[in-house]
Length: 337
Image 1 (cartoon, rainbow, N blue to C red):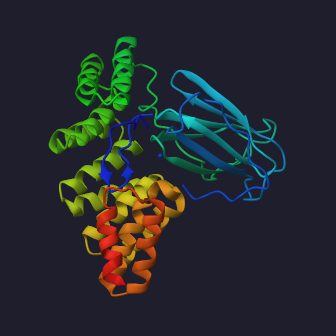
Image 2 (tube, rainbow, N blue to C red):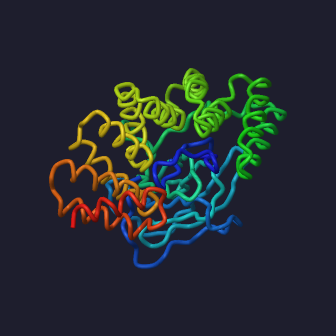
């Protein structure tokens, strides 16, 4: 996820997924090995748990490599419960590669779009060699990891990422358009351009770029999610529901997908389904998705369940006291006293 500054703010959550994004893993007796990527504390986190094909716990260390289109970024080993974690990661697209005993298991890979400050959590089941018909841990879009991108186009993309990191959205847009002019099939550039345009509320242009990305690869998760966000902002709720349902089916453990699917369901007055999605978003994403607590509070207010509504709103204020809508949340709590 090159989701650095390209953000859609729903209160406190910045969630647009850029190039490069969960059931929560169980707590382990000791902390897993951590990566040493030299990013600041606003970087993203990838954590997860490796399990046996049967679903049981692994009992030995397994090497986990974090790779980008430029090669291996860092490597850690799981702890004695199969848990691992990479922290302080630059937003972008990563592959999590699991190298277990090669005599027994296939190499597994999970593709992730990581957003700044957010946590992606994976549960990856090892796959026995010689076994067929078993579900895969995840699929990698060849288009998103396109090795045919010309060096000049990639250089423009990198310049766009740097400009975005520094809050220079218009400059980032220029570099992304340059990258696409050089290589029109550059899915990551179309996705990031759509996200940057969304940041500027240029919704029709954003939708066009994201649909172009999906023309290149209809199975790409990030442009699917971003298109759903655009459609919510355009108040095209039924279309947003279709797109975001697809996004959640692609990555059911993505808190971003679950959160925005909840937003679309809420807009369609499907409060019970929206409730489940908001709970899932917060469960999977933790405090980074505290905004889900606010919307849960509103849902329970609409149902007349004042005590539960007050509980969620107060919890939201504890977790996000300085959110842009904290004043509104406090007013709602006062109404519920």
